[in-house]
Length: 494
View 1: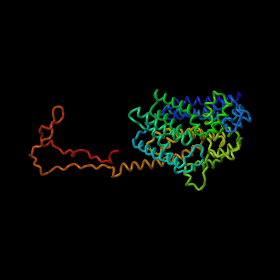
View 2 (view 1 turned 90 degrees about the horizontal axis):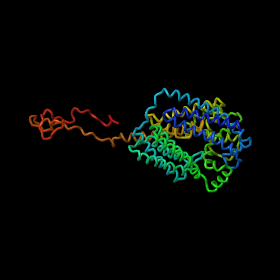
View 3 (view 1 turned 30 degrees about the horizontal axis):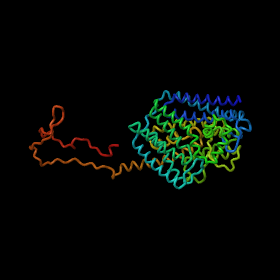
View 4 (view 1 turned 90 degrees about the vertical axis):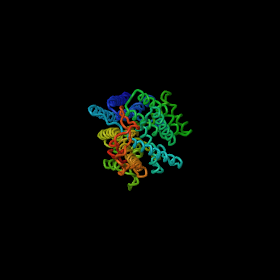
């Protein structure tokens, strides 16, 4: 028991170090780092503490009570599974502290882009994506949570534009009145909640809530925004079990209630959250691999490269790290013969089975680099870079995936980024087309036959600098309004 508690203490100490360093970092990176801390605290601290306290009996359908840990004893199993986790978290903490010290002497990131053209593009993408969502629901081809392959990849891609457009609008929409802004953001959150319930997945609404926190980081933290972010987090934790209930039938909900009886009443409201943050299971998978390598370096690099290429352009089937982890890594210690599911492998566990402690260090460096790049991408001037930043920053990939899983998210993000870029290009061409270009009326040519001795009555200047239309002026003061003025065409302004 002491060894297990010592490992949990090492986890907590590393997470506290990351949190302290994160508060010294400016901008979006602070929010992303604190999000990682929250994710890892639930996975590597809260879940092991509950298992040590309760030591539940493994039952079918209870993902919290791992049968493998129960067989070797929860104290011993947790201490062994968390040993490489503690090492990986302290490596990550050292990297974060070094970056925080370096960033203190660097200038703040440039202001976020508030180009109206970007907002129009995101609005168009949002409308197109929601049409795709509606079509997917009506045809019964909407991808639900846990599905390994989509029934219609094209429709799934179009529907993905809806979530991307919503996240982009939450981040970059700027309105004059605070009340109007709150109503619009609330409407976007409600739509994402409805979509999450429709596909039985919590990811859309979780991404939208994280986007709100990132928006506050872009605008600058105030007391009101801080309270709003804390309130949103509390509501999210309280409603987590409610969202989980939409994935269960009446029979499954009754079975889950029977499984929860062996846990104390104090813990039962949080069981759905602890089951969702399951990186301790991934650490257990890595421990039971017994030091055997999972993939070779060539296989890892090939899989990473193929993740960036659409599947239709490849001759064979590319590796999906989540399903491969389930069948090959977890399958080495658990019977996964009739189970097809995509699991979160976790960066530390993936690094351990790929390259030992060296692999843990490399994956930690990659994860942190991806976090910094995604935070910087939100300040870019290019649509492609902004879209990739939005997708990575608002997805759980920074907390629950490793190198291979992150490359898959980046590859899918590239496809969505190209689609958004095409929409942006089409809108710009429409705005510049001749049909929408106003014609400039040329200035009238003065009549050369007019007698110069004819008195011209134009407004003369008065004492206060204005002109009185009733006062005559010298003919030399009469000028054509188009003469001497700079020429302006539509192409010279944006």
